[in-house]
Length: 112
Image 1 (tube, one colour):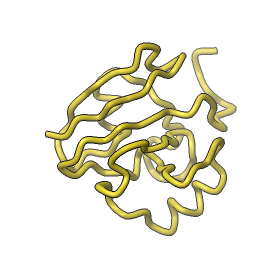
Image 2 (cartoon, rainbow, N blue to C red):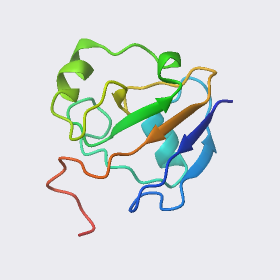
Image 3 (tube, rainbow, N blue to C red):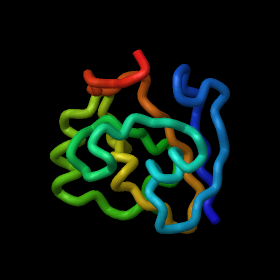
Image 4 (cartoon, rainbow, N blue to C red):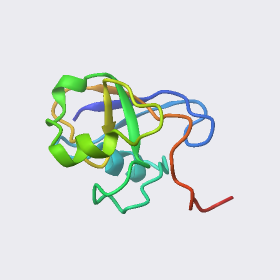
């Protein structure tokens, strides 16, 4: 089972974390299943960019981006070459390191 290392984020994961999830699980599902409550305003339907992450290690092991994800990523805050929508990035057998950007474009975020 691959390990996901999450770099520290002031809101979602202040100390950082290491979690495991079965291959074939999306990064978003793995985070949520481990109480890292990343935004996912569209309920993981690839219709927004609130679950945007930057994959610092293991990017090539994830499934390929499709055209819809590529188009949406153009709107993500803090876009980098190794950016993915965590709801569309599925784990293989390789460990990954992810960074959750400090901001997202979720203007309707709850818990404010």
